[in-house]
Image (tube, rainbow, N blue to C red):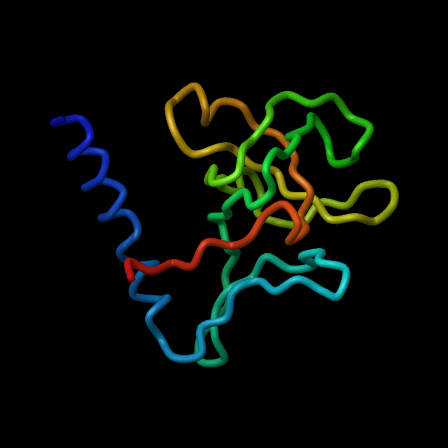
Length: 135
């Protein structure tokens, strides 16, 4: 129980600057294009500089996470609906040979979960940004 409370407290404290940022007016999260692809991972509003949106949620029932950006690469883990993922490395959109967008991510959770880093397709059929808010 003590470990859970400490983890919750540490997470809350680390998110406080982000939470304050999210409460400004007209906050915009990454939006997909007509094909559902995320072509940008930037969040922000017109009054302040935009920054990469790092926290996403799996919305498809199952999602393959691959060694590289592209559907032909080896699956290293299977993610499930409701899993949270964080962009790791340099926060940017990676493109496969067909030009489709991918994100380099790690699943939130245990230290073992965080160690496995892989690519997921950046499309709203599979993932969506998690709003930075406690509400």
